[in-house]
Image (tube, rainbow, N blue to C red; front, side, top):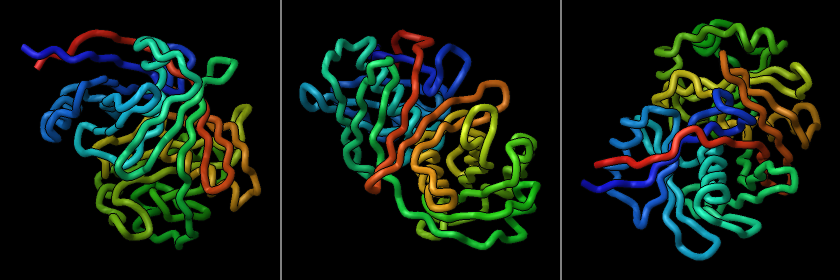
Length: 272
């Protein structure tokens, strides 16, 4: 019976039960797509990341939700780097992850122990808030942007925390290649308890009702906040009920740095 190395990590967290869960599986080579998707569904956390070493400092990386393979995932990238630095014996200064749709992603360990990821930050464009979006979210945003996802701005962090969206309706909105990817909505407001911005991320289009910590969303949020408020460096809090995640961002040169911590919660073997 084949046994594969398996780790579960809370990413963008300083202790267990915070941030977002990711399963990390270092492999000698990628499994078939259907098997990797089946494992991700079995793991049943927001993301399962598979990594295959290609050199002393680089790995190929792929990410799967329980429903689909995705082109970019920040929290699982952070978790993968944490595993390599903490459990797999990597002693270098930086890890390079090569991906099909997001290019090369670099992760460095900072002096204070936090991990800094260098990600692309795609352009955004302001879009009209339509009635169907307002109804699906259960509240009308004051402004919205399209890009990788739908970004909906509300007046206060309290309004963001109070959202109870119609997830079935959200899943049907948007389309790949349009203003935003179908069924993926970031909702935010400036301010919060000691942070620049508070947000939540609903992703029924990716098989996740609400994501606890979403690095890819913060690459878009960093650009929206920079263009709307002139802030290139942000302290961010993703306010998933009962958990919460701290993600710091620095935007510059068409890229964004995502900074956070991670902790290992499970180590073992996955038996096929």
